[in-house]
Length: 473
Image 1: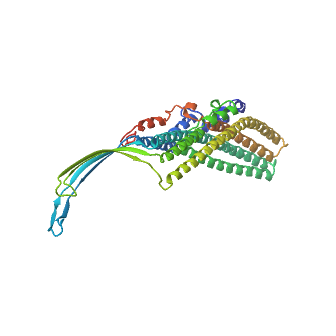
Image 2 (image 1 turned 90 degrees about the horizontal axis):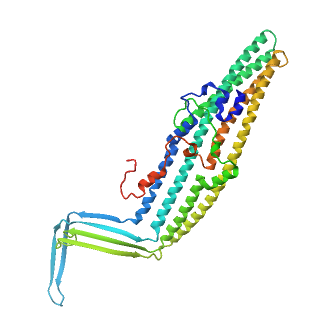
Image 3 (image 1 turned 60 degrees about the vertical axis):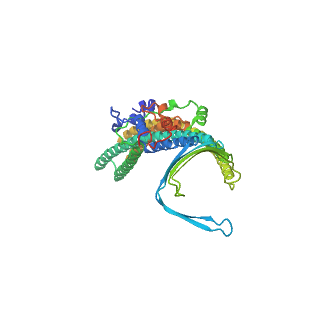
């Protein structure tokens, strides 16, 4: 069985060990299925998608600057008026007459105002482009979140597979140690071994039971993590396979691809674009503003005179506003935006350096994981041969019980190392794919509808009115 595993190590930890608890069946959970479940159900990923949809609304908000603003007003009520007018007295000595007018009326009226901005220092155009850059940055951030979730799902799947295999190994080890203790006691009863041999066998069994408890704890923790990341309880797990075929064939090619297309780098680049446009928006506050306003008003029963029954007014006026000095806030905003732009450019350089380092590290880890498979497989084979030899030598009195127990524990440790190495081999391949920026459903060929943020963006971009979101809420 172990010889077969050495040549087919890519199929995963469980198949090499032949553990019955994870036997592949028609209803077995697969790594691909776990990735699909995580892609559809993971709450943090769905939250990020909702965040992208919220950022989409920044574009129609910016486009609103191109559109007119319409306001309708209405008024009405009861009021009491009293006024006294002075007549005469123009010529010295002439009689002066005072005329008092008072009464009640119920004025009411309605009006409408339409305002259209014609020029505002290109602020609307720059705000629109800035909002579009923010949308693109949010989409790239979403890609990063998708990679993180898929990598977490693959890791959780392989961790549960590994811990289940280790638990089964430790339980089998306890069974072997129990048989060893029984045989040692039988030999002690006939005087072939001493009490020390029995104590050593008992100690090894107690240690083995302790390792079972530790393995059970690790398995329970991995199962909880699986449920958290993937969103469903695990069933029987089929072996996982590496995804090396989707990664570039050399380290320089991987670094070049990652620094050009990794979503973290793309996010940083779009953040630079948004910051540059923020500078232009801030500079736009120093430009003149030109707008035109149309107004119509119809009133009945004047609120200022009892003699006026009806009035009507309409106007179309242009307004030019030239800022001269507003206390210096606009200049400070421009300087602030320029400093933010410099920060975003440094963030872009940092993102590229971080991605480059991540690719190199992941590449090295994958190479080490591949080499570790051969080493641990050889260790298992050698440990099995050594254990069989020690047992035969112990039967003829050339080895002690302690030697047999040590050889047994060495074999168990070697098998645990092999399980861990095979898990590391699969996880390292996913880690490298994420470091390159290619860990996506399309690349993996997952049979799942791929979430497209473009759909929501196109639904809301040119929306002029309405409070319902596209899903009807």
